Length: 367
Image (tube, helix red, strand yellow):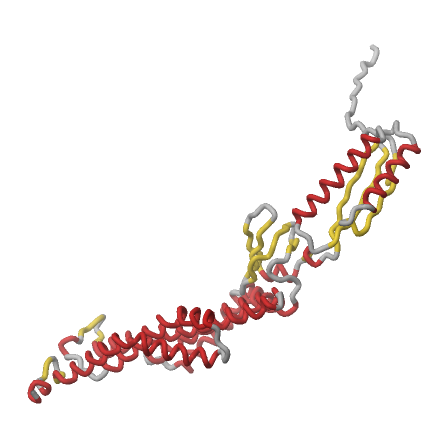
């Protein structure tokens, strides 16, 4: 039996093959149990008090990455015990390639990718927990800050993973690479100055908070609801239900009207009354409109006055304000109700609107 284990096959004893592949097979059978144990320990480090829903959500996020990480790591360690035959080596572009180095490099790449994926899943879970806490305070500004930094740290992790692959899979000197990258980064910063300005503007938005997700804003003659604030741009759903992207630099540099932060919403109406209407009738109409607005519980302030009179019409100005916050659909309903009540008032007072028709008279000159 000992001779069988010592028998060499492809430059390796049979016993080494049994140990390597036996370890891998054993891990395949018990990887779920080990993964759940490691995930539970990791969850205990992240949060002290665990709920069943939180535990289940965390396990669904990290179980698969942990299983893949364990499988690749153990397979890499087990196969590293074996010697690959020289016959498997080959030349490519006049350069000799060692199959063992290739397999080792591929193993490192897979391990780093799975590890970074695991870290990203953990960040997603932490962000989810923080969002749940922020929702309890009804603070949308915290939510957008969490989403922003979640994406930011994901980018940082991807960069770290790329550097780890260069260092451990391709044996590159990262220090010299970082020095070179700093010079390249300076050149790229000049070439992509606009993107860098948008990135800085995103930090200004998050810390200065001129608007948050869910606010109704007006910028550059466009009005809509902010749906997402990214590293480079802000996404807005307009009143026409189109989805537009505005660079963050423009959101910071241009004049922005945050309609959601208005204390009141204003409605305006201009009535053009016929010149045949007497002063007494006009006074009755003015007083009637004032009484109607004063009795409306949704009107916080109003102004009704004879704005102008001239060659074509008497003009009555009606300005009123409603309390905020208020959905735009509710404000439209108030406008509709007030307009109909004013029309009924004019009908009751037998007051007609001014005619806007224009007559053109053509006279022939006598010869």
